[in-house]
Image (cartoon, rainbow, N blue to C red):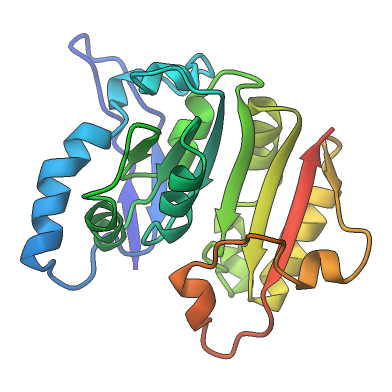
Length: 245
């Protein structure tokens, strides 16, 4: 099912505040249990990145989203139920993590999981993660995670894949020199697509030196629930690490 959100928000003068955009896929699944609904209602307003700060003009400093100064900043686009970003934030309390997940049930599960944990270095958006990417200032991120994105198997839907030349241009712009673009998938066709797209981009360099570099999870890797479960008919997980030249 295609869910369109192509009416730009407008300010009091009637000008477009966000670019017209489309999100493909469902935004909500099963009805939320009481605990997750309460976490969504109570915690999301405290951690949500204010949309009036997301100009999509590459002028936002990540520090603007946090109360206390942090040493570096990472972005995770489409974090599912948030196991990865939640664990990273605990391991690295001096690093700021921005996360986006448009799926309501995923966001609710994430918020419930961090309810009783420190959250000063996490900020989230329940919407398209490219809104954050288009808003961040040039060379403001240490890294970007895109873990197990939707493969969009049908050829006519390949244009919906998040890894494409236009988005790679944006990632290259907001990453610092030497910054990392980390991508994973257990769908063979999508893995090849992402690797080819990023390898052909002039601003990215693949870090793999041998097969183990892309077929074996790196040390201290945090597996997501999706990664542990795997997609139906999927093969081995592929780990792609690219560096911003």
